[in-house]
Length: 485
Image: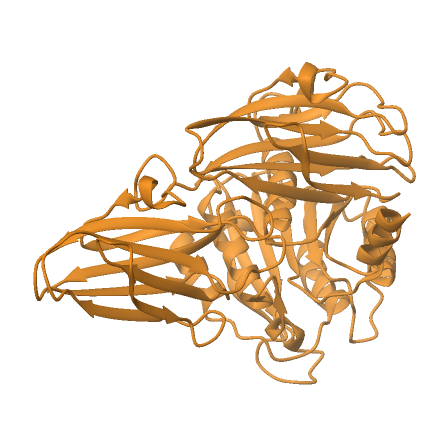
């Protein structure tokens, strides 16, 4: 019952986050891109929500920064054959429902120019979803080509428009559009609004609750839309997830990949799968429910002993995505981890998708994890590196490094968090005595420490630990700069 209530509370928790719209015109001969001088192929028009609420935070990071990061990754991954434009609203003034601007006309893709425009956006104003759709719809009305629209939003219209009715009217007028919608950590009210838009547009509704899930959802709908312009008929990229074992000991080995079930999993039943991981790798498993009515699903990750370490359930929510992760440490060179498909509340329907990834989070350019005890300290030379530790979801809570020092040599260390996480730095001499310590002044602050060796040191140890942990984030990155003078 506790997990059921937690699942319901997530659905009703409202958070305002990015809104993006991708318009994809699939026939080249009369496309918008050609009229603008672009190349033939898929046409994309991004509409980005830059309303004032985007200045708020999620997972310790500004929501606008999350949106920019996802947009940048998405643009970097687009094929060169697409034509892309950018429309933004709420970025120039407060309280203005007409603050909608086409920053880049649809045309041959210029990835760096698009990224530069996106990075220049600052959140300020209102959220005119319906009016932004209307602005784009006016351009589409002159074309007979099919257009796929993908809207990613918190769904909270603040300008009294009715996007659901407008999209329905577009299709009734014969404008050839299909609308997919991704809701990012939305409340029930917002979900109902967004689901209505997707239904009216003949598309699908997706739910995501953090940056990784937003990225995954956008990648899935992007692949589906781009695949439609291939010469061969579009084929699902999801492999069939085999029937799993009935416990971790009988788990079925699988490789990382995107899967879909070809059978239902009974209520209160789980099927188990296994993967091999190295020290310093993270297992990430996402589950997305199909469009069937009131679907339930679940996913769990288990350690080598078969003990559950993290899990998530989806309680009666169609097109919803949940992702969990778990990070290894340096205790072993190789691990066998497990994940399960299924939930205790209701049958898991056929067509439930599972996204299985193993991500390298090795420390300072190595092929493993820095040790969490003195005897496994990783040798370090002066330079600049990236390191990783885990937060709530993972075992990797400390990194030990080592380097020799000469008498009167000065060691300087700078730790720059990649997220709003604080870090502690501790320097220990060759006898493992603490000789210097420094902590971040606050979450996200850079930490600097210097120490001069009074005598030649056979080895000096540097210990890096988080001073604060972002909830349910695995891993957390830090950049480390080491100098010896």
